[in-house]
Length: 342
Image 1: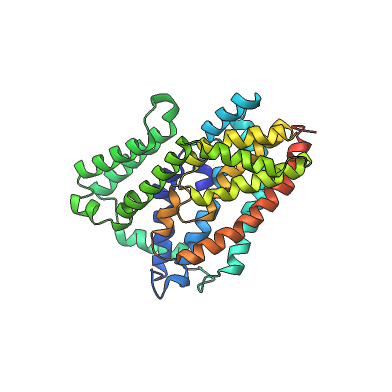
Image 2 (image 1 turned 45 degrees about the vertical axis):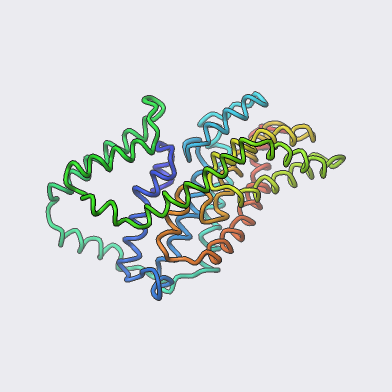
């Protein structure tokens, strides 16, 4: 579902918070898996799995998340390489498919759910629909608001409204339509948690980008690779760029602060421009899988309370090794087959 929605909705927070996360949580609760003793039954696995797959989805499309068009703009300004919608998707096709195949298998092996078979899922859904009966007025209102919000998210390039403004509009319509009460809004603890601590981390990342520190950081990394082959320099600098995301709570803040300086340094080392542009663009999304604050959906899934922070970080680190091997191993070979570099 997320993979399809990512082709038209350019906000991973909107897709996950409004659509994917509620489905994942409902499925976990259908098997009586809740934060605490029953978390490992199904919910803990689902939260980690869906989030790590979300990170891959972000990397696969220009509309995967809000800062990808910004990254494409930086790339074209520095190198003249145009990361169009079709080019971005084509470059991500093979490595993205491999990540989608291997990451779920890896997580299933490292962090398996206790409930390994879900034959009742379809039956539970059918029984619940029968129990609910015909759609109520509130449910019809909810559906109408969802269609309005989704339509506005899909057409952001036309009207220019920020995705957060659209989400707040949706909440306002639900309040006015009687679907939600103000008590419902104020009692949503996980949402307020995101506003308080995640917002602060995003601002810290933005403040870091406004200083000269990131440029000096890139220059220091470049000094280490002086005299290296361009392949060695590209690999090391890409790894530094990737794991520097531990210090950021936003892909946008990280890309704004570091994409251009690192791209310039990699090009100065002799790396082909198309290869450097694509590698850093895709890594800018994949690095978000490292932490529970790496991009907007991270605190949503982590805040559900199913997974401990140490476990989240450990699985994120191991998943990053697999993703790096795929996108830096198979990826360049695929892009070379496409004739993008030689």
